[in-house]
Image (cartoon, rainbow, N blue to C red; front, side, top):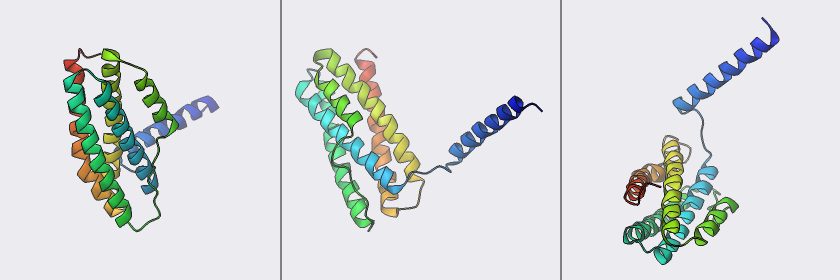
Length: 174
């Protein structure tokens, strides 16, 4: 067998192995990685939604944003409690990372319908990522308090995602 064919075959086997492992849930997120990502995601939801409450002229967007503030503030408190009860040295991120800071700056620069559409679009993307993160971590057992938090919070995140998509559809889908 030629060297190129062997490499192609090994690459294909690697891709298949990766996909199979991912489907089986073999890959995991560390407790610290989960806490960091969950806390940054929550802070982003709160900060972007505070902007929406202030800037949006659309009552449906404002109502959704207020729900995001309320729900994610509660989830942030629950995450802090889960971390505290886990008796570990896990650290909650109190600040947004640079990626999320840039998204907030971009959102803050918009007004009117452009703001509303960008806000809703960001909510959809953020909640898709959060649902994926929480769903994956809910299957892990390395930190029971965090695992319980992920399981308990997941349905709310899924509901937020559904609501954000419905909001997008009522705004013209763009």
